[in-house]
Image 1 (tube, rainbow, N blue to C red):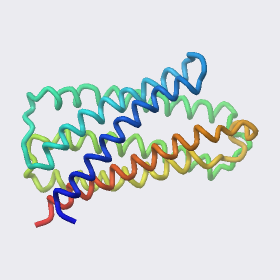
Image 2: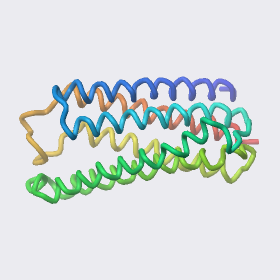
Image 3: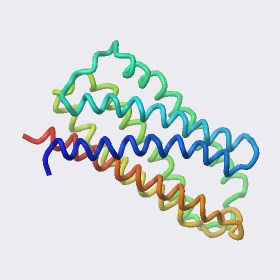
Image 4: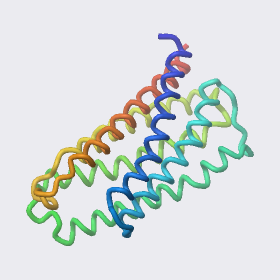
Length: 214
């Protein structure tokens, strides 16, 4: 497959992920039925993720054309400003998860499964921040091989953790929450979003990797 073809596939997947992420925000509110703290935080997280991904995709579009994005560029500046807020919100919700687990939510659940949930969730947050942050840092110098290699490495890591998080979200953990109230629709929605995220990361990896190759 040619370089332009990989790039086109990556951009198609990324823009589809942008739409799906904003749709996930609306679904979070619809699923809750009424506004509460958790549903609002979930929706806000998806909205911020959608905004960050929108700006990241625009920068990525120019980066894969080997076009330097100056530090003064509005899109790049917006990405750099909002990214820490998204990461902070994700970390705050991760801490809420830890508090819930520590308060007895997972007392009857498998320790191995709970450990996997915590590890994958933390890894996903870190990897996603690294993917967005790496491009934000190296966008002004697209010809820098070290920057491209680092971006490829983080895209690869993020793809694996996106898939793992999708599995964690879809497969019920026995003893965690109410087994009688499994929301099949929600698991399908979050599972499909995770698959799209994984595909977008892998295609983006290939687009960058293909440009990096001589």
